[in-house]
Length: 154
Image (tube, rainbow, N blue to C red; front, side, top):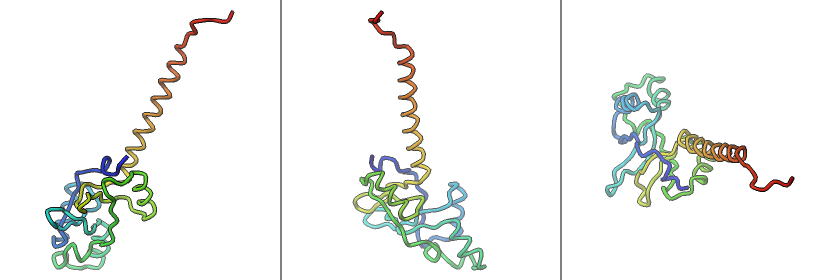
């Protein structure tokens, strides 16, 4: 199982020179709490940071900074951990746990954005696998109840 197989490929992105207002509007429109900040390099959208609704509240609204006087790069988090689309899914989950991140950008060999893997995506994967296992058990029990030996030892 590879990280790139299970990531969400519909990702909300923004540039680091864009406005906080634009980020807020995108968050509202797409019902998301964070947006990946990307730069275009060699035709690839390279993830360079992330901005969260919490960043906006704490670094802009809470200290009465004029929202139009600052840009994404003034507020965004530059510490961004990524995973390659060919990385093992379980190793990627382990890296997320170790680094305490709920979302991890998935990139291709050139570092270009492919998608994002979130804890919600992982829960969906695990739930689906558990349902498959439950179905196997159900089918096995159903088969055992209908089992009639061909030969009896009377």
